[in-house]
Image (cartoon, rainbow, N blue to C red; front, side, top):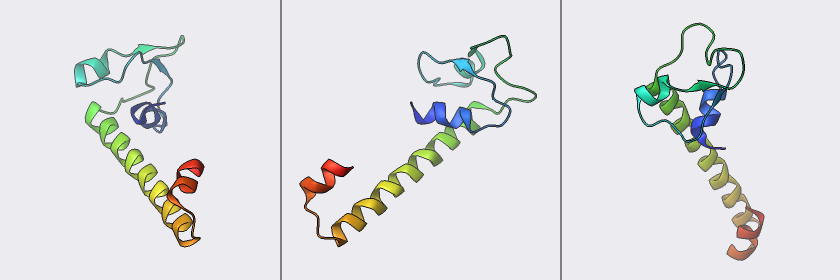
Length: 87
């Protein structure tokens, strides 16, 4: 699942949609098709920029989490091969 999809799901008013590929513009974002009988958004939809910013935020948080885990494993004396197997 892409970070853009995760970002969409983080908005409370998101009902779901078909996403063959991540939108790359406001126009593509507005053209998302509903996945069910509900509209993609309930109420006011965020902008593409809002969702893209949230996707970057989620990606950076995931990278920080991996870096923290890597640091902890290094402090425990694990080798790079062992750390790679775990992560």
